[in-house]
Image (cartoon, rainbow, N blue to C red; front, side, top):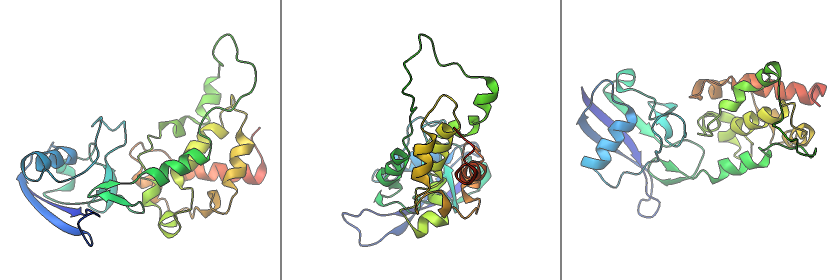
Length: 233
């Protein structure tokens, strides 16, 4: 197919404001958007800047806005977006250059919910065993790859960048409902803050944006319920 790729470009060091650059090239229907971006960088414009790493939907580094929707460029096929594609950086985070955004604010919120096992019991001689049923309680939220697609699709985050955001709440959920962890009340206290879980307005943008198909709104609802009812240890 003859593809026309329109990319929102911006270099804070040289540009007064963002602008649109257009590229035309041949693409196969089974090419991924990431493949097309690499072709543009390799053969048309070496100054184009974007992140990528594993190219298999695992690292989450190439999240961007593709035809108005937050997606991983390595998972979107050209046959599914058509010959005319518009690509922008994730919204709500500072742009470093072109499609590369500053992830530091996002990861600061991730760290704020203490995303690690809290358990001061003496370490056992073997691993801490867990039943299949106990694991199923939080299995969905272990799939998060921290791509920021959910958080940067959230209108509450756009309106208030102090909001901890859905990705951080998903990570908190993963530990709050892990029966091996003893830090649930610590994390719930953090999420009770005015910029915590209650800023979620249940818009479902995050669910639609998640490349791992995590039911984020359900997870956020379960955290809200835990705050109201105290139904975790």
